[in-house]
Length: 188
Image 1: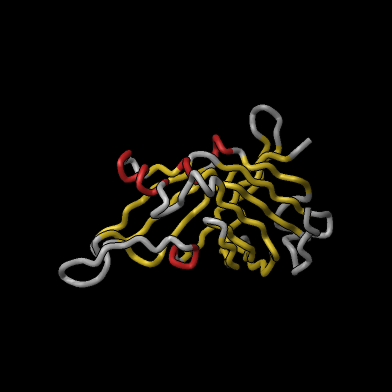
Image 2: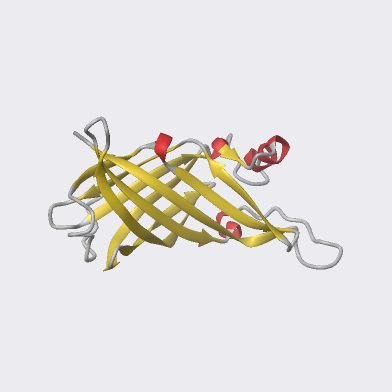
């Protein structure tokens, strides 16, 4: 396990502790331009993550997504996305994230820098995060809510399948926007 990031941290914003992502109350959504005229959206259905916040506010976050859990509400497209043309889920079953720095708090917003690995290729990425609040659920669990947003170029991760359009341009855009709406439960 890596050391907690020490870049200004999130002290006073996120309560100290270890917070485990509750996949049944969280979503990871993405969108990519299609035919230059619309955005195809999808989700990942299987993922886990942890946010650790030290008493001094230093924090780190990790997450793993099962690449085969992609769902764009079109089974044939989903099978293609799982193939070697895109995620190659049989060879690379996980998309991984590990923070390298969390801080830059302004109000309820903060930044999360980290390393994202897709198809065995790791690249640095900076995400925009928002603390949505803390609450005790009806079962006595302490919870926090976070929204995390970012974007990436799939070509940077070896996902370079595309088709040229007759009128010019490509079938798929070169930017994927994503949002994670996270509910996390404090570990006992």
